[in-house]
Amino acid sequence: MAVGLQHLTRSLPWFVLQPAEALLGSHCYSSLVWDVNWTDTACLRLGLSKGLGLGIVVFGSLLKFPQMYKIVHARSAEGISLAMYILEVVAYTISLAYAIRLRIPFSTYGENASLTVQNMIITLLIIAYSPMDSISRRTTTLCRRFGISTNAFFVALGATLMVLGSLALASEAAVPPRALQWLQGMTIPVSLASKVPQMLELHRAKATGELSILVVFAQLLGTTARVYTTLTETNDRLLFWGFALATIFNAIIAVQVCMYWNGNQQRAAQRSASRWLDTQGTPTSRRTAELPLVAPRGPTTKRD
Image 1 (cartoon, rainbow, N blue to C red):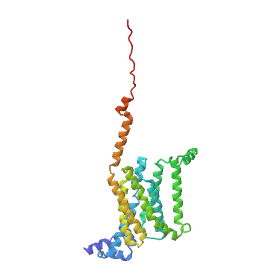
Image 2: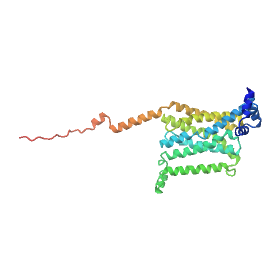
Image 3: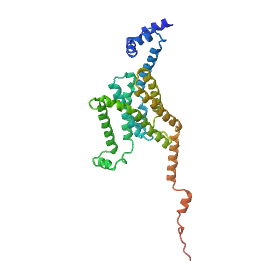
Image 4: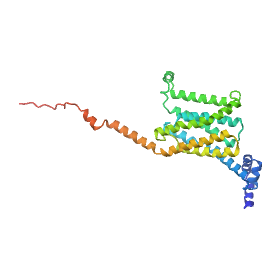
């Protein structure tokens, strides 16, 4: 059987073999692919980690699209915490800059690049579809004076801050290596804190709103897989504890989603009942109390 598998693996086309060698390294490529030595535990673990990491990178590039679609389709960001996504953008951007500048293996953080951009887009969508006039009266008055909406102003402001922050983190002159390492350490509490507003929002509303359930469970699976790949391929304890604690908090949100699965239907029913009462008017007792005290006089007839 081993001979047959060797014949199969060695006859694979170059566009499969060369990326496999680059991914696994010469030693593990020869052991796992060329010799089909699946008793090599160290290389087998590395191969599993690399394959899992590559799958996460590919899957992560599409992870947040369901959430984007739900917001745009419903033209609402109800049930989604803006504070959570702002903090996630901060944490993801710092982690991405940290991984790139320290030249950590791409398979251990590759999806972070796509997720950072996706989180930025979702943050701007939440701002665009949320009421912003109540945040600052002065800002709203100024925007109306220039003929622009408050939401458009805050979207432009948010996008500008994201671009400037990303450029600063990419520059060693603006953010020295020691400062970047300190910021990476801070991403752990920031990332965990980002989950708290969403937990509170779910607990308050008892409904998922426009929060994508698919994204919630995909994030849980992704951080769980990242715990394994980080342990296998790096010795960076900051990355490990970041993913481990994020997995715990993502699991809590997933449990809340299961608890409030039917919350949207219940809220819709309550709103429908409220609109019906508004349409029908006040209850019978109040309608009776509001009748005129003196009945209108009917038509009179002349007496002969």
